[in-house]
Image (cartoon, rainbow, N blue to C red; front, side):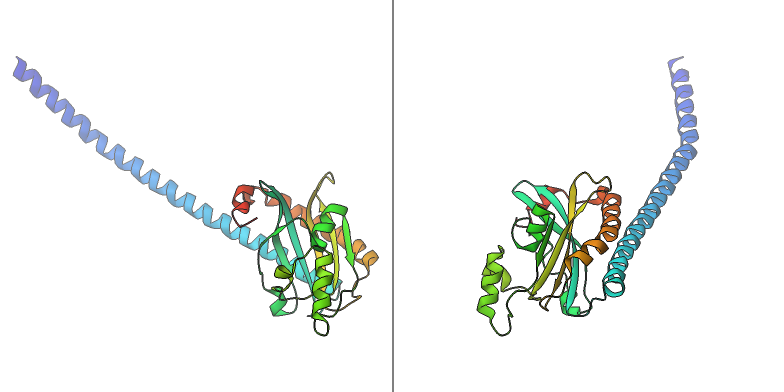
Length: 230
């Protein structure tokens, strides 16, 4: 009797395994389909991100060249502020200049103290009308930069040795806290009208704030920012 039971059990087990094979195959096919769909959605998301960033850069370029009439002697940059463990930092999220050399990214992380950038963050705005000419009086230009909190070891590495600056802080969409700084600079002295730039920056600042709000989920961790050296 026991051998008969064993044979029946074996047959039932074999039958059960045979029935499970198609079901397992369907599950594998469904899993593969889900993975392929997830990969496709991820590619679409990455493309949307790239397209949005390109649109932001294009908007910044149009604002500088068409609205402000900037030339290859001027530059505009956008810096997002973060509170990092070793002190606040700025991360550059946008830049435009007609001059290819000035349009290069350079370093991406900056301390939030010193320079027109730091002063604009602290006081809301910063206007530096005219620094000395670095071509004819480099030593005095270095001293001018030092007076605004930029040490010589930093100013000596700058590709664009600007003489005019205007910086203005940007608030979040609710207008409750500063989140970034819009920085204008030029190698020409007395280049900017602070009243006019303040007016133009009001609308552009809203565009920048909306961009930052939309990218919050992709923002870097402040601890990772600190690893950059600040």
